[in-house]
Length: 144
Image 1: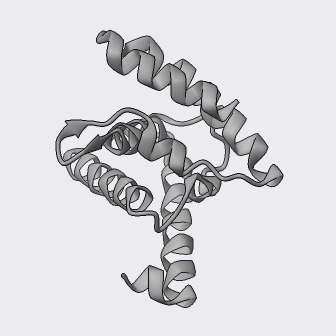
Image 2: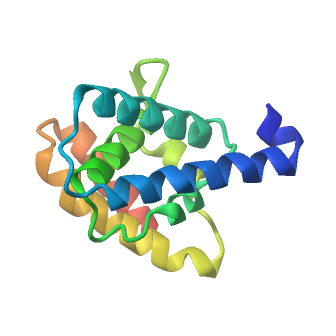
């Protein structure tokens, strides 16, 4: 609610998230410990929650230095967050929630193209279920 009501809070949370993204990117050599994994999971759920509630659109992912060359921690974070965005109240909703979060300005074109590549390389190859795979493919197509 604070982010919806005040631009100051909105920007503060955005910059705090971007700082965390940069930290994950700089810690490429570290293996994920149990506490790091828990932090990563909590951050992913927070990010997904903020996207699903419409506080941020996918432009929040601009805080990642490079979506085409993500570290293990960044890949895990993005996968968890994007997967959680596909579910609402533990029910698979498909890409509708994420498609709503696609920015419509020309400046975000590169971000969307990088995100589509990330999904094709890191999400589609590991899914077994055809309905989830089709949902991710349609979302990646919506980004292009």
